[in-house]
Amino acid sequence: GENVEQHPSTLSVQEGDSAVIKCTYSDSASNYFPWYKQELGKGPQLIIDIRSNVGEKKDQRIAVTLNKTAKHFSLHITETQPEDSAVYFCAAPYTGANSKLTFGKGITLSVRP
Amino acid sequence: DTEVTQTPKHLVMGMTNKKSLKCEQHMGHRAMYWYKQKAKKPPELMFVYSYEKLSINESVPSRFSPECPNSSLLNLHLHALQPEDSALYLCASSQGVRGRQGVQYFGAGTRLSVL
Image 1 (tube, each protein chain N blue to C red):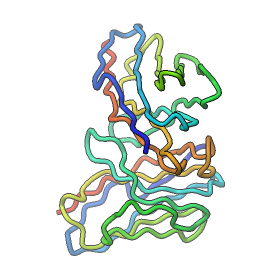
Image 2 (cartoon, chains in turn brown, red; image 1 turned 60 degrees about the horizontal axis):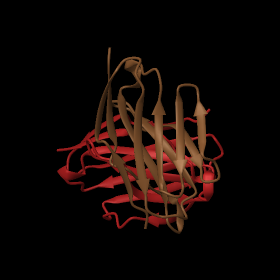
Image 3 (cartoon, rainbow over the protein chains, first blue to last red; image 1 turned 90 degrees about the horizontal axis):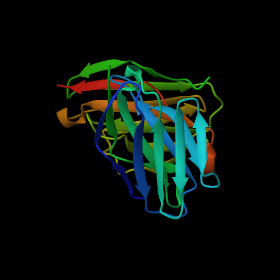
Image 4 (spheres, each protein chain N blue to C red; image 1 turned 90 degrees about the vertical axis):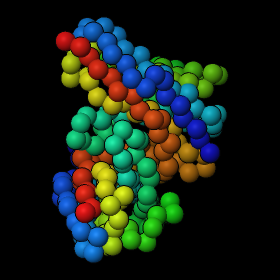
């Protein structure tokens, strides 16, 4: 099955700085990688995802990069704002059953005003 | 619109009660999911319905009983729960179950407390 590891577990940045969260996966057959943001008291919200045939994808201040050789993908948030403070989960599909996602443990991002 | 609606938002129940959680989506998605999430942990998959048929049951105790009445609705029936079942229960849906069609959209969850 798929094994997803997420580093670091907590991250604190100053408002306006960039934040980078990295995930590694084990199954080279995995073909898409979503990132979810979960604010306190809410469900996870899909913020960006990337398919395995693409190396980078951007959406305003958020970008995701994928290195298939090294089997890792990273979330980049530029010009961070206090409302970016949340728990971020990376995920990858479970081998043989794309309906199952394996989630990383999550990282708590704190943006200091 | 990528909205998945869950009711109720909060639920408190005793160990002998029977209650149901409800989930609804109108995006035409054909796969729906139930997850359980404990504090400071990632969501943990419980059940997957694909085209209204149960396709995955992650060895969930029988006190949790899912039901998919139609392609837009998903229920989770609860009976004789234990205090350790207290958690956030999340519903999700996806267009399909293969490739990027499997990208899942989550509801806000039902915060369940079992006394």
